[in-house]
Length: 174
Length: 174
Image 1 (cartoon, rainbow over the protein chains, first blue to last red):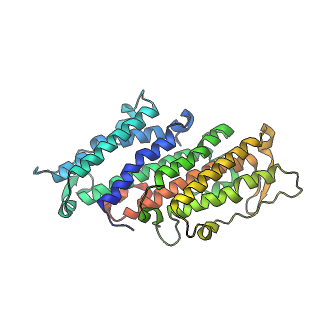
Image 2 (cartoon, rainbow over the protein chains, first blue to last red):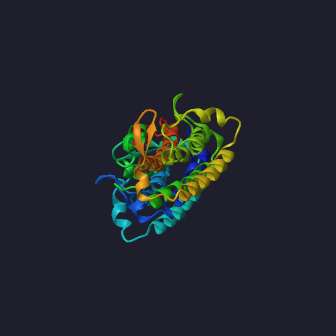
Image 3 (cartoon, rainbow over the protein chains, first blue to last red):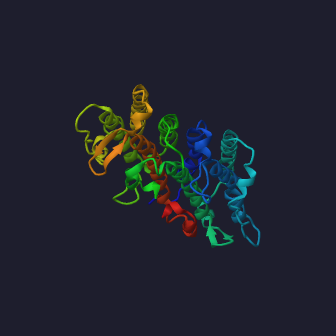
């Protein structure tokens, strides 16, 4: 396992918009909007969710942690907000919006000029209680990767029947 | 779920090398070679495995199915061959090799000019028994996605400890 280091985290955060562009920009609508069942998200939903995170989760929470406020309670993160916000938009629009917002987030993150002691400063998560800035930033990276894995999963599962007996060799088909 | 259609499968197969280039080309060595435990593959290992598949699995097996041979037994696929074959090569070399081989595989696949009845032709898998060409080609797509998911997973798990209490919200950390 790796220890959290800002520059090594940033390199992953910077890469995510480019991965999504390569993956989804030219993919037919049917692949992009496919879901596994009623409870799963499509690739389109997932990019919307990542956009919502840039706006309301990562940098805003880092700023709460670093602020001088007495109470450092985070706003709850609405995991379903994007289902409404993405309506009527195209995949290309969402990809460009995410690329732009992520670029700004990383500029913002660098501009905080974090020192070693900052990473141990804490905020108050509505469900998890006390969390550190280090944990928030490591979660940002793992959360990107979680959703890249989720895109792979929802797409692979479209062929759960078509692969026939090979299903047992493909962990992703669960 | 989607039914298998050649052009919709090809669009995913074509995209995989570009996703891998965007994801891994400029990633520091530590991320690219990170493994979860002794039994898991790094991103580097996974690209090597995909290269080996282009050489010995997908198109060669499709050709066995479409041949006029009496016995259509596949060669067993060596899932670990790449651990030796990739030795001493750089991530960039592997990515370029995979891009080149995948391009050739797709040209080859189109040149087969498959008709509807071809998809039901069968081969003999060493473990699974009778499999159809449709199942082989659907598996090729799902296998790509399986390994993209695996790259997300092995990278995310590097921060399994660093995310602290957020671990419970991130399915990929298992």
